[in-house]
Length: 486
Image (cartoon, rainbow, N blue to C red; front, side):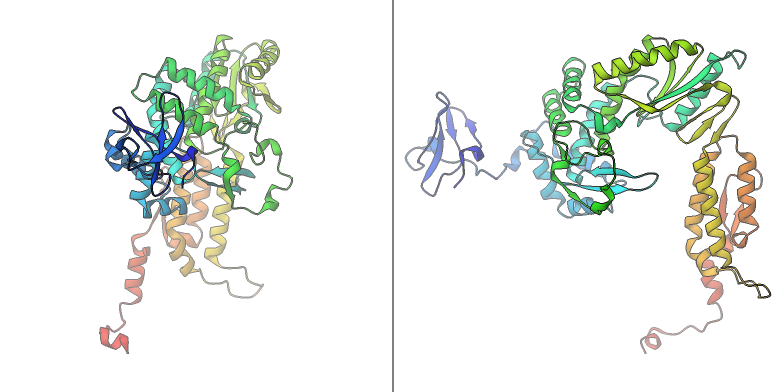
């Protein structure tokens, strides 16, 4: 037996049929009065059930707004960096069943967010993460793909550099470096640099306000064929309260002392969105555009990345007065606040730290944290490769060949990754110092160093794993398979 709330009504011509009530009767819906009764299904074909309550008609898959083949492409796109995640593996194991069910739910506007996971990360700092189920990622990716083009061309500010194609962190730093040069007129006039931060940005977003603004944008600007579906998914994605139906993966003690303003757990007032979802990043760019347009109307040069804004200007007194205007606009228009402690203001010759770089008036350097992390990784790898220390008078330990053969590929990837980051900075002496220390250690027998530009490390051909074991086993007598089984 099914309840009235579970009945799915289908209109076929002038006949109305619904799900079964029991073996002999079926639900009968009166479209004139809205009454819902049950009657013997053998008395009239008008009440013969056409579809069970929990069964979808798969023949409708090709007639939905989003066809099944488009969802297969979205699934392929989402698998790129999530292929080994448990949620993705489970979804792929039951791909056809899961995908068909998802297509029906979205097509019939019956989609409900799945159960996600909640955990804490400690690097680079303690932070709460709410990860969506893989099925939800498919819906969010389609939503992003469908709406992002319209946002890029008709809404987003050109100086917003977060999670946009061609507008990453490095480009933001380079653009700010150019703004300093322009405002100071080639470093000939005084100017100032400043940075402001939005307090607990993602956890402070008013979802009701965000949905209202996004819905208005879709109604007025979006010109694609899926307007109604986008309006529906906007409410579902941003107002689903994922913290109320998630599985906790980290130890509860990790939340002890964690600021409540940086956590979604326990919130039921519609304030805050999970960090990490592609739709969350898109909404962050969408909301901050109103703030950035206001800054542009005041004549400021700036670069914005998610919740950090770096300014360059000449009139210091005016900027200090305008901070109050910034706070008023954020509080009244977007329900956000500026962080009272994360504020920086200096002469441009002092430079500014942003996005992992230190921007000076005549050069760009990596931040101290990046340099210290690289130096720590190199020192640790060298100590392990050369073995532990020895007492006075003892022979030094032999190089740990097994460790270097096992970790050489990973070590090369780490070093080349840091070198790729540093090649955009003025770091020639720093790169040379680090790579020389590697060449002078036991790693010098395994790796080749680029001594021209000091930008790359490679594994020596004779030190590859295959060649090493070929040389090691060259004099060993070959045995047959039968002898091995003995």
